[in-house]
Length: 448
Image (cartoon, rainbow, N blue to C red; front, top):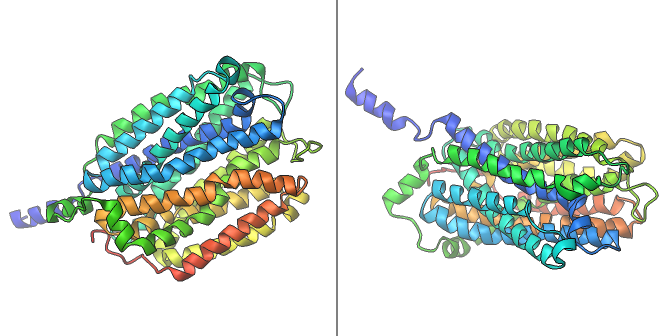
């Protein structure tokens, strides 16, 4: 073989081996979403009892959800900060910084004093740590998606883009699985309440465990090198001094469309994970009537549903590569609209497991293609900032308010989830309109 041929093959070799790209994009988001879900579970199970004044269970739950939503407000700020670093300094350094921020904040939640110990300082400290979690996640997702898509082989960007998305169901299973194991080891006589031992110290274990996971994630990410797309941007000298100003001036339409592309995904996601846990555990004769399941039983059912979330996240990538991102998501979003209208018929007929499976299946099908679609909306020199802002501003419109609105609609409906399902349908309709307005991105040159 000639030296010229050898050099040509070396030049065509990806800077990052494919297994390293997959692992780095998957491990980091799994850890980040694990940290996020640990809080989401504790927001329903623990924090209303430990971090807010006793007396009104509904007010305590809403207060816990409000703190949960605070992280969503911090996410766009994190997207701007880490996006600026990622578009100027590179993907690798930025991803390491985001992972460290999330890991430290989660660990510190595990050692916080409760309301009984320090009064209102307890929820204040909880809010600060929650803001740090949201700030970190604001920079994590877009960086992981860029690592996957900017290193993907031709024609397989959506497939590779599903690996950071797969971190969401894996993180959910790890977080809730660990909480479930702890709850089983510390059983409660009251199925609607955790045990005294669990509330005393058991709930802290999942937060402290995150330190081990972060160490693994850092080891993987420190082995990465920059993507060819970003390296070419550096070589051409086309890095923007202020990526935020550039993307707002020249790509504002893509920012708006990307935000609404994600809206149905976020609302469905947090209704199926956070609200459903409250609704599933609430006694049938309570002020806010629910399904009356014990925590252990319902979490096992949710984990079963999340398995479908993971499977269909992976299936969605090849579908989006073959049929296009836009067509795939139009069909799935129409399915979400119908699903929202079927909540009461399914739940009234005892089809709770089917409700969870269908909801999480749709979640996988809508979430998977976003790993490629949002990065493809923006050129390389503002891609980290643009995709991150779209993804995280949508978290305010969808995820930050979804659990809060859902509890309010649940109250207005006198315990019926009909209005909650109708809310999901309305948000999916907005996403459907945005997809109709938007364009197909499958053939976009990712190294532009």
